[in-house]
Length: 351
Image 1 (spheres, rainbow, N blue to C red):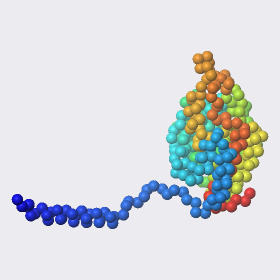
Image 2 (image 1 turned 180 degrees about the vertical axis):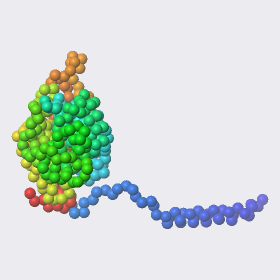
Image 3 (image 1 turned 180 degrees about the horizontal axis):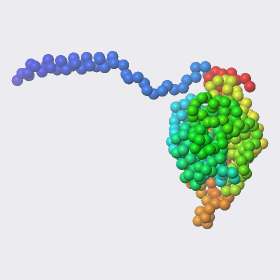
Image 4 (image 1 turned 120 degrees about the vertical axis):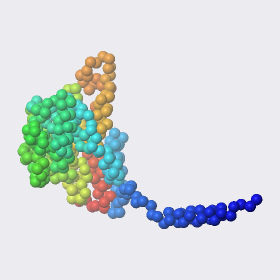
């Protein structure tokens, strides 16, 4: 029995259509790539980068390895990942030491220091909304009243650290403290800028029973103010430090400023006995992890202790207390990472 003649032309037409379609598809360009390119370093001095990178790794050892990886590798080579680790996520307020409380968020930190004359706040977050609904609300959750706030320290003149300051001044009458250089930089004509108030230089500044030690540490910004302060863990005294600004500047001149500041601050911190690492961003002192460790810090005999009376009552060490020698190494790691960043960019640093 013969096949119907009309099937062959239809088959040929289908094949022709398929060939034509494939030809059109082959000529259609793919959609543009939306994945950002990897970081490249066309001017890199590879040998010098290797020297400083591996020197930083040696100094860091096992205990400071996360800090080395963050500053020397992640923030330099994979900046998109580094930036994503500072997403503006809410973090619960928490008592970190007897006299120190975290009241910040995932993108930028804020602290409250309890003194006999009231609270000293360190940094004001990005804007009025964050100052009210994160910082002030965090204090309320911790059992404080907004009236307890007496002073606000600004660590450096970037808006994520002083953006909420004017609101706190206007609403709660805080006295705002900063370096003269930072005040000049913040006086930018914006209606949201804080009103110039207390200007501090280098040296001690006392509020009630608490003395803060200030050092001007230019580099990240020219007016960065680094602070050393006493902290207590169930009555045992330690010494904490918040460096004014750790972000590595772009220019060689500012990198040199930052390296000189670190070297000078290392001497001051050593004399003061700094053994507690604190920072104005949670990625720099591992607050995101430390808070969870604090919440699950185990007592040696949980059944026999109504409350801990000393650090010796705990199985687990306080996560922010890294020790005097490790804090000095932490500063050295930061310095080597700055040198590595310069080498990646082909910059020659003259100190």
